[in-house]
Image (cartoon, rainbow, N blue to C red; front, side, top):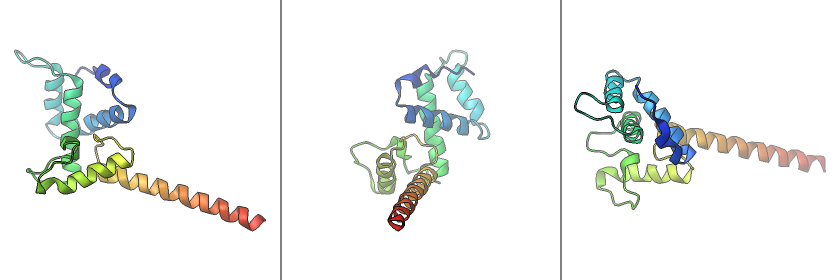
Length: 140
C-alpha cells in the first residue's frame, strides 16, 4: 500500500488527522483493507486514486457505520455546506453543524463520540475554573 499522504499537507491539521484516523479504522473492517489498498495502489488497467479521495471515501464509510446510518441517509461529511438537505438528512445536518461549532473536522470518524469527549472536556474545564474561583473567594 502506498502511503502518499502528501495530499494531507494541504489540509487543516484537524481534517488531516480525522482523515488519517478514518482510513486506519476503515482498514480494520473485513474486506475493506483490500478495497482501500486497491484504490491506493491501482489494479491492472485501473490507475491508483489520490490519497485524499480514498481517505474521504473511508471517512464516509466509517461515519456511516459509527452513526448506524440507513442506506438512504447521508454521512455528515457528504452533506452540503448550504444546509439544503432532504428530510432524511435533517438530523445529519444538525450533527454537522454541531461538529463544526465544536471545532471538529467534518471527516471525524465517530462524530457522536467526539462531541461527547468535547463536552466532557469543556465540563471539566468549567468545574476547574469554578473550583479555582471558589478557593480564591474563600481565601479572601
